[in-house]
Image (cartoon, rainbow, N blue to C red; front, side, top):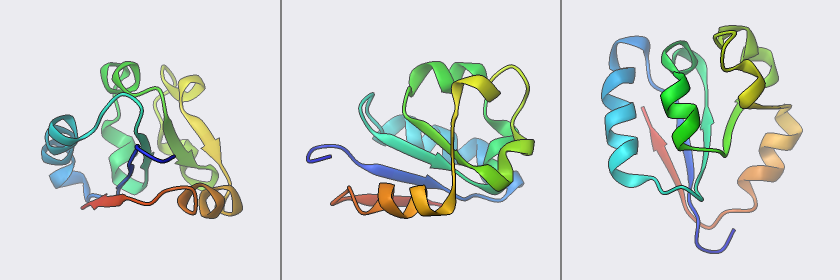
Length: 94
């Protein structure tokens, strides 16, 4: 993943809208985004349509809305670790 960036979205619920706005200013179509915790509660179809490389940890998939569950890639912790190791740049938004 030479030229792409890994974004980790780990914001508390009250700050998630702000984080999605920040992400829109930084992320590109080819970037990978892992959404964790409360960030999943405000994940919309519009965001999913913008970023095709969206991931969620398997133990948090119950936080996803039914309309987007099939469009977010669900990964285990070991897969998450492998994914992180593929990137030279990682940005955590909290």
